Length: 146
Length: 426
Image (cartoon, rainbow over all chains, first blue to last red; front, side, top):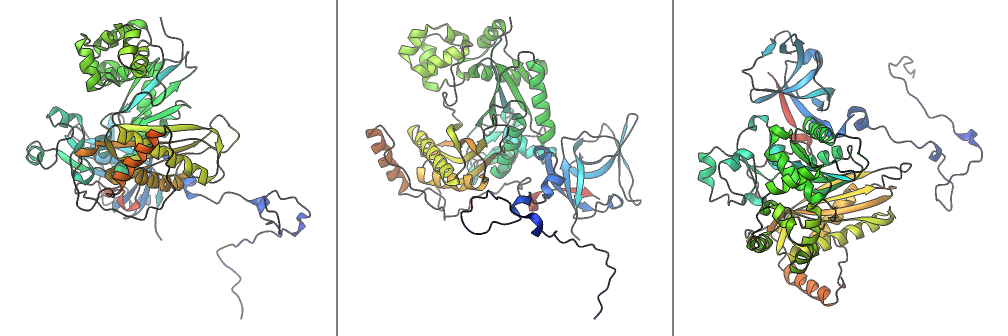
């Protein structure tokens, strides 16, 4: 049976370690053969350190709705929010607006603040003094189930 | 003239439990909030608005039902998972401002400010509270002074005059110290309980300033070394170390180890000992607690070794002062934060959520094991007789689980993925 030779994924195998020769392993093992991988031991990949740059200021939230789908924020996605980042034009922010948490792209023009949805069926919201409005945190990552 | 020695800062979170609830429910800003004790028994925390309505601390929830409703007071069951997590965020941020942070209770900490002579300490305090507010949403006040007792006084001034002080007050000269002491009512002085207050009032003491005018010898003879230390502290001479002043809201037992400890069993033994000592202090003052904060940390002076700091909050569904219960919970908790291979230098337990032992509600299902009480009495009796802790605990498993009444519990916003906030994209 022929095996398909073109595959979109590339697989890596560990390199052959037989060429190491005599190496002293100080692993505290008194008998038996020490693991040749000990010398190459590294911390496992951590999604925490990739996604969370500031642990004390990071919070999570769940998306509900469709207004940000063009920015890749779909219903039920998990947001990573960093409160230590400063709000700025074009950043995606979790805001508290008139009694509800919402997520939108910030548009700051002259003295105007707009919340811009990322879905052409939705309209931008201008923030005025009448609104009860707080920028709660800046979205840094979106985690989605596939 | 400005003081030129070590300064301390006391950072205190404003209405901490209510503030935690508001972070995840900003609609409640400026609204009256009350937090209920475990099993929704009585009021244990209030927002400023609830205080202004005259809601007293400790108000039994069932008696105040109509009052809550009439005044539109939002009620919450204690959400210690949330408060504990928010507290550890605040404390970790504070560690960025000083290597020496002494956590005093769930919502307050002392920072030692060594070698900050060239700093503008008011500015530094402002930076602390701004960072904490921005990163966590928790408002704080900062008091800075040359002694711990004076930081308490400074903190009160900062809290009382937010506009004038910006939430930070620094006592850094004799003029400011004397002015602050004259402003401070005796009953508001840290460590002055009702009994002491009564005796001092008889001596015409009305303010903290009156208290420091008393002769040293008289204070020492009439009261004890603690009151003398307090007097010196208020005079600007630092005498109060960790644990000198009994905290009405928390009992802390923390120690730096003589040499670093890395074995988990050794750490468990230390923590168990701290828990027993804390439990004994509770019994001595006739109180019980329903919460403890446990922390571990490595030696930050040894820059070349791996550093680790961690803390965890344990919620006990009933008030207890049993060494058995507290030790078992503490040991289990410390094992959960322990990291292998770290050289730990300091550990501690803070017992908080303190209530008088004879005052807590009788509960049908959740209560301390009835055999613990006489057992603890016997242990205390024997240990007192021999002037040493002769009777100790062997470690034991915690197999019981509890459930409690929490009708107004807010979600565990930061510690359970199912409970995180939802943002609307309508």
